View (cartoon, rainbow, N blue to C red):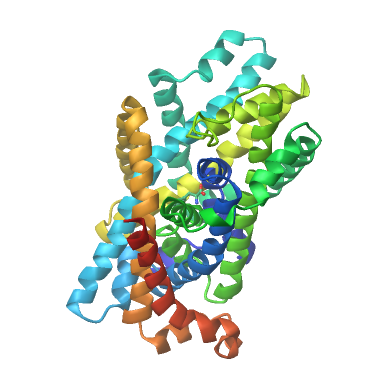
Length: 448
Ligand code: PHE
């Protein structure tokens, strides 16, 4: 059984693949959108605190569950269970995560489709096809269904090939390019009029807003969404890590990469909004709040690229292509959730499971496209603001209360002999047992 499973060929392979899952639309579309709709810098501050203090420990719990269980989320959690009720609980948590991944992919594919259509637009202009350029960036059912289908097709195509060939290969080289482009764009934006106001809105928090219930729930959901938690994905990726690796540092590196890229994206997009304002574009709603919503990024960035003149076409093309690939390295991780479950638990052939599940998710996406205004927001909120934190919290409860401490220690000692005397081992076990579940629950109670 173990020999038949895939695995990451190297340490770098895992970091790239896990960072590939983590870094995606959540960082470059979700984070700036949430920052804008939650009033700017206060959101950024709360997000950073929650990402390191709650999401990172929960991330470690999920990686450990997977590496210990060496299987999909349900099987892994059940391996840690001793009593019948624990096995049932394990099923609920593991399967809940798989459902969550499925729901997320159903709306994620639509937005990733927009990224692809915005990559086609400058290309169509370059080759002298303005009507096509216009059509691909105009909201419409046909366009949305078409690009979602294309994106799902690519996702299915990669996942059919399995871990090393598919996931790992695709995750390489992308990250450095994406970071380089973001940094160059930030430098460019900073030279434009209005950027300093944007910087102020991004970095100077209004501390009175920090405890607003809506802001807290949004920041918590965003932190868990960005690290792909509560979806069974990191459990599976954990199961592909070799026992020789040091989980503690791997987890920290991925968290750092993920949070940094979100922070960079905000540093580009929020000031870009203020640059647009200096050029006469309205960026505030009647009530004084920043205009946001799912299409905000798609109006701010193209305006920025247009202002660059001819070179803007190339920059826009490169940016949206990189974003599409970043979305792809995330979507393949989401599809791997239900697929590895179907393959390992129900003996379904990998290619069949991938195509079948991919098709079902595409149908769900179509349903959302047909009711875009209402359903996109509904599914996204349900899955990311409620589903993910709750399931991640249940994973922490599992690790803290059901898994035996001696077994946890034996697991992380592999690849990290000195862990017992480390600060991590002094804090993390009780932190995951008490602080994470209580803090996550408190955010929800506070929001009611
Ligand atoms: N973390 C991904 C992103 O930021 C989204 C994701 C969520 C991926 C859940 C897998 C599981 O875009």
